[in-house]
Image (cartoon, rainbow, N blue to C red):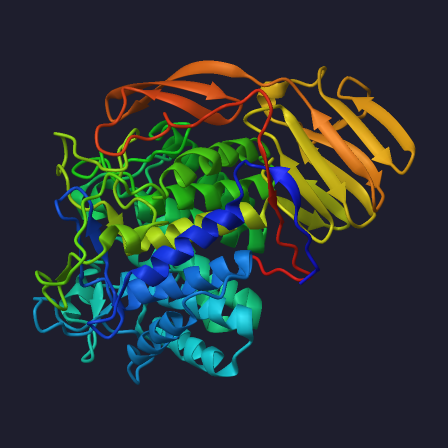
Length: 577
């Protein structure tokens, strides 16, 4: 890691700081009375609030949390809770059977049975990939290779597609051979499509051809044979397709976009973009997503938003640069607004007298969940308790805690990128790097400062579309030398939205200023309308206001961005997803 110094930085959104908060929640979800198996869900509206276990506790929860811990520590360097993390990792490895798959375990107080659920396997290979990427541990590679081989072995293989004929695999094989003969495959997006994302990364890291083949044949299944996506890009909302479940659909689009980028398949990129653009019409521009198109329509999962973030980044990387701004709005608004930092409204209990060990705990729920991300939220409220859909269910879910961490990481790792000697600042967020630091005064001021650490031949900075170009000003200082540029000068813009600053030198300080846009929009979410006030890319007021833990309306705006003492994390070498 490059040495860091404390300095005055804008007191504005810092994603690595948010990763430190979620690290606390990941550790806090451990159930010390039940072999440190993490709780899956929390109900914060009850008095007192409580945590519950579920059948997702095993490969899914452990996989997501191990992955999230690795990403959060990479962003922060924070070492808190290493003892709990080691318990998570040991538990995680204990769920594998000799066949290479991860199995749910028997809970004596619950009705679920042991099985290798195919949804869980995606979280499993996700964690194994991050684990190997961060450590190079050959033992973990052996586990991952065996797991990938099992995923390939159990797939039903036809001439041009592979699929799984059931949602659960057992120690005795698939539950029914008849399902194979009749080709009654369950939801292909949930059980095959989303797997492509971690499998592709594992292939890129290791060259494992089983992983690549799974990606190839699952992608063909989704695009050409599955019917998950309708010809116009919309989601198939039939019951057999989980009512158009957004997390699994957009997660599949994320996977397909990455596979298309890797294979240079423009037809798949077109397929993804068409469906992604349709999905955006069902979401708000600040990042709230429906859970599905029917029963769960009112319930936003942080998982779905993170899928939107990741897919948008890949589409931006292949040339659709307009998605950088869309993703920044998601990062600045519903992702970080959905992180639970104020728990004054949660009624807690300071003892375990009413706990049901292995199922439910009322103990210190607020303290243990601070930093977590919303499991099911309304556009204007952390708690979803509307009259439509299923009413109130859970407020937190472990899957969303893991996904929220991954969303922070995707924003953080793509704020500053390098390609063939060109450095691009894609998000106007606070971020340090070995090349330069970005200090953002948004949303208080239209001002971004760049502190250059290494000379680079070409620097690009994305300017929001609402800032225009004529009033963009650049002030460059190097020693006693000062020069100015404006956005109205010729040849200053490339790729539609990027200001081209040419070569920059170590020690240079560059200040960019531009006018801030203040505007009002009407956002629609499942038949409801929300009047939304914007300052730049930040929502500063939303009405009607929520009732339990309202979103957005406590954001304070100042004439000048407040400053604080702090430092940016600068790593000599970073890993990417």
